[in-house]
Image 1 (cartoon, rainbow, N blue to C red):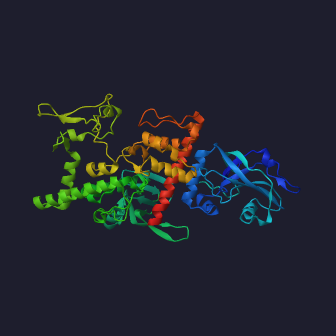
Image 2: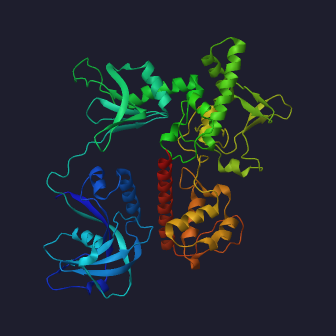
Image 3: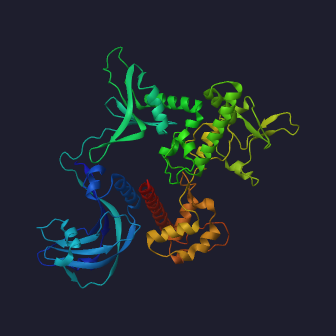
Length: 541
């Protein structure tokens, strides 16, 4: 059976009103549709120029349409144009529906002598057409993906790259060749590794390390400041030969490099997840601190600024220890960071180094500890005994036999945990991204994108939302208040909830199917807002 490939995303339309428009010599189109995004069975790199999009925008649009697949969308027919070789209907789509076409339309019938793309020519220059007398139509379509058989030689077997993700680095190794790209947290860390380790031997393989340059669309190459290109000669598979390298082998090597430098020089460490997460905050004001940290010219937010301040204090403390104890600055940095990361704050007055107690690993605050919240944050697991003679650590929840006993170090962002404890959590709901300053700011963004006024919902937003509710968090569960607020701002007037309890954001009053559609629309709006913020950020660089 021939392999099928994606041809184009469409809004499939069934309308008897549009079928009424026909003319002698023109063949009716069997499946009426609005083309939203043309793919032609091509790769993203080849399909993007055909839509006047970047590869990134095409992939984002494809993802958004995939999430909307099967959704019903209402749209308007603005006019019907007739040409000797074609009849088409020009349409107006809602702004929430992604469409790469500048002139969305439905081709109703055409001559065998012209291709479907002839419709674009007519819409750009409609002077050769006659506008048919048609009332304004309100129609409904379904988002769908049109597929077709691949052309000969179009589909090749795809080899997947060997990818590994570690605490500090990301490794992408070629599926068959002896080369890989290693992405590190900061350019400063990359430069430090290249300075000291231009050649490395790993499992009998001689690795050559150099700066990585990525090929651009125009054929030029651009240096990637956080990445290292690693090359080596693939060993022949004979007895006694070197072992073939996998991405995991390179990951262990470079994660070890990062762990070494970040442990000895905490002021060089930056937020490792920054390459995975979107950062839209303004530039750091104190570029002197950023330069010392190898982060000059990068954009940072309040959490990262706090980490930089912590790191600067640690550096100043280490400088004092180095001068007072007559030890190297590296040794002093290690000692100060060890005390800070392993000591306990006791009764808010002193810090104590407690052998054995400092071996507990971190666990984010549980529901049990949140239930013990006295208004100053989740309850802590440690304290001095009543007589002040013992340091006690207590479990705040039941622990099953054989499970590790862990304690919560505090509800801290990734930047704080890195600066104070020297580690990065895979997931941390305390992280956030501030894209709206308030519920009013959120409503203004929705008004701009939808074109419909939403000012009448300002009081509801003010009564329902706290500043934390409009923050973007790393998980959907943690971002639920923001998504709820978007759903309420997008729903119809008759679907608005009644606010009985201040501070509680309610669901719109509608069916489960309508709620699902609103959730998808909220996610799409959030994606559009973030893309707009990224464009604005790039324009200022």
